[in-house]
Amino acid sequence: MSNNHSLIYEAWDFLKIRKKWWLLPIIISLILAGFIIVFGQSSALSPILYAFG
Image 1 (tube, rainbow, N blue to C red):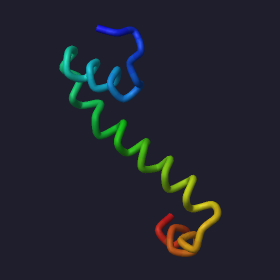
Image 2 (tube, rainbow, N blue to C red; image 1 turned 180 degrees about the vertical axis):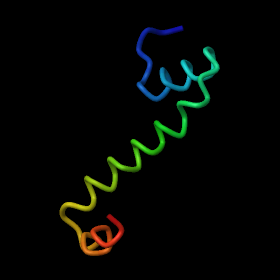
Image 3 (spheres, rainbow, N blue to C red; image 1 turned 60 degrees about the vertical axis):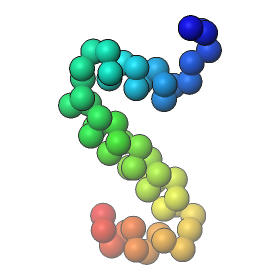
């Protein structure tokens, strides 16, 4: 195997080998929160996202 793996592949490999499937919802929620923060700062969705928070 090559030494140049992406971060997503490394995380998936970690979850698959070590059977840490309970980490998957935490990772997904952190990624979604990051997208909401990035896209909520300077877009037309800001008032809608503010209402949910």
